[in-house]
Image (cartoon, rainbow, N blue to C red; front, side):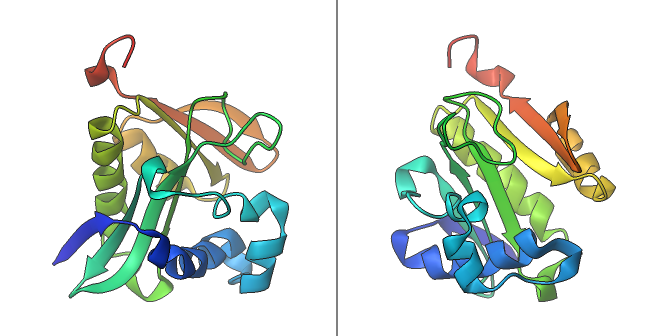
Length: 165
């Protein structure tokens, strides 16, 4: 049975580990050093603090996935940047634990945590060839707002928080 807990700074090495698998896509995992030195990827880890919200997904008390949000400035936007003040969501599941529903569970858990912390809008970026992930994101309220090269940028606005939440 899967559970989640809040991410802490001690979880950063695991967050880098799963991010390198997600960022590598079908080409295979990136090197940890590349995750740390490639600015397009590093800013998803560098500067992350627990007050920006993050969860670790556990199975039998073992970390198997992570999801977090990053507030990135317009001067250093991420792949899914929409506007200043709208954090970008990052989610990744360890390769051996994929296709078990853990990603959907973790995504819904993170969105609930974001809502509980007053985060009204969240964006993300998905590779064009990952149609199943676009469908999962649509199911939890994301809509496509743009296409950037081979990426789909999606946005979710939590209507339960009202107009000014």
